[in-house]
Image 1: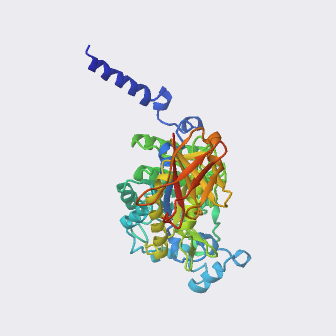
Image 2: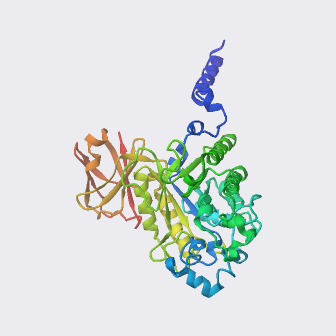
Image 3: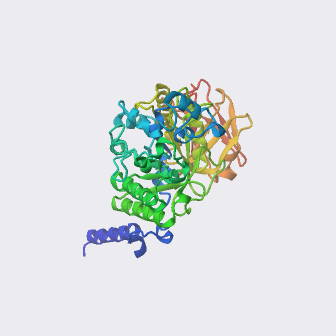
Length: 477
């Protein structure tokens, strides 16, 4: 046998050893048992490389655009729990709950400016590597073309398959597709009272609580599987409430999702909150918070662009929003602690983004397209952060033998900084070079490394390339 043929056979054997399933169990379809779905890789490497994603809270609640995306709940609370005057306002503007229900907002939800390609372009330009939308919120209105409920965006309101259009537009731009489901709480969230307009039996599949529990559970499972089978999301995000779904329904969905992912060569992810799924099945999500130290297991966190007095995940009139600096500083903190960050935008009822939100995420993108190598594809260093002797806050990431020191405050030209976490005793490797990222012509920094610290001098007349955060790229021997 010729050497070339032997080499070809050897390479084939190496491929078989490295890439074929290591045992027969992993090649079998996932079954609806915790043992079987626990064999799935809950945190694939692609999301650890992607780091940053965007999604949107957009639905019927965007029409009243008051208080927050939980309008469905608060409009039904009387004066004993009317935290923002929502019920009083609702009845003053639209009449008593016996005459006007949440479902009456659906015809007003026309979404005449919704353009999935425009949304996807906003996401892409922001530097997001995965993106999507809320497929269904607590209110029971599905944002896709569903055969299991007539209360869906294709059949009513926009008359558009929002999830389907976004899936196509996002995937076509080489981003991973994200969909979130918040409806596990739909059955218990709002108990409809007999005198409300919502009590009409024809609305039971929207409000949920009038249904028999087993009938509602079957609808929950069918709708969840429908999103998977029709749109093949790379990430399925769940809000609170999975603990309210009995295991047989939950496991049927999870096994189906993992099997569909395998069928379409996707490394799919399911997220959960609190302890509502086992850690070996999904990826833990922290809502509006994040760990402040390096966690051994990678995690996700999600933050709304909304802030301040009118804080909301969905669009509300007069809402205040975070700045690009707020978002990048949080992203840097998250990534350095072994996390990935999901930013929520809040489109208006007509399907357009307010200009201030578009401007903010455009500036997030400017920073990420310039400094993204310090974020994308990185892993945590041995420590996440330190405050230098000069009072500068710096976060660390790494990619093989490259370290990134990301400064939230920037030293003055000609000033030195002491990085005590980058001494020889800590890095176990000598520093080869230090450069300032973000400049057209790279600025090389002089440095001295001892066992205890790395002392770096910022060159004179180095232009500050960003007012958000500065990055030093540190190459190790």
